[in-house]
Length: 316
Image (cartoon, rainbow, N blue to C red; front, side, top):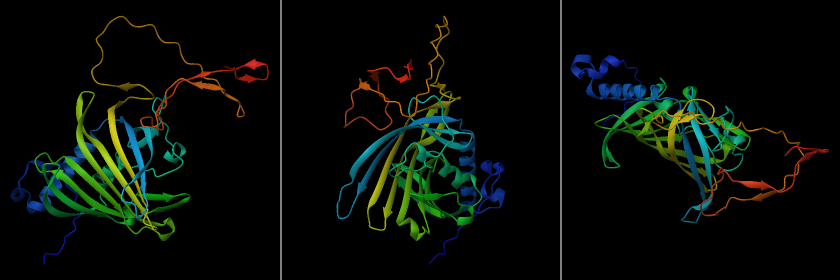
């Protein structure tokens, strides 16, 4: 039986155009070097960008066979300066804050948008093992397994106020022709008992998308499954759509600029009003909320029925 060999690899761009004989490397090591260099080039040339993130959160308690849909979230997620940032759709800007401030309850996580791929391919900590060729989504792929030990891990799990950094491992598949990443799996390991989790597994699928003037490899969808010690499964299915370049605050580019013409009159700037903490707001909802289609995070419109006052002063 052949022993599994785990490899740590540091490669240079000069390897891309050379044969195994020219480099002195065996073919498997050279292939891994080319994959790493391809992914490094792909990830580092990505512009700051943002996508609409739609998350379906479900739960399955044993012995049930089907997942029960709990809710659906819509968020804007952005990669800005190497960080994942979040906001509600339509917000004027992204803020560097904990996602839990936006979504304080239920299963939620970060990393699948950008950071997991960067940790696996841009860090020197992972150890790799080639599994072989496999077919995935109709494509011939190279599959590798990888491991990241605790000292090199930035993977945190949180349950309520309990939090722990854990090692992780998983697999990835790259297209045999283009060396584009097709799928990445991340599995938590050595989960502390106090978190009361049996397992955490994330699966991320990738595709090329056009942003502005370029084509980039971006996450298309992901699935996260947490299993607690009672056997209950918590599943998040996430899709990333409407991806576009992020250029600061709420100004987003959607491809080709419009043809030049007369400058439109500037819209009046919105007026911000700070309301008292105990303000009573009497609203009449104008937007239709459809339980089957509406999502947490969707904007709604309402009419203010009575003025909001501070003493005798009318604020709104």
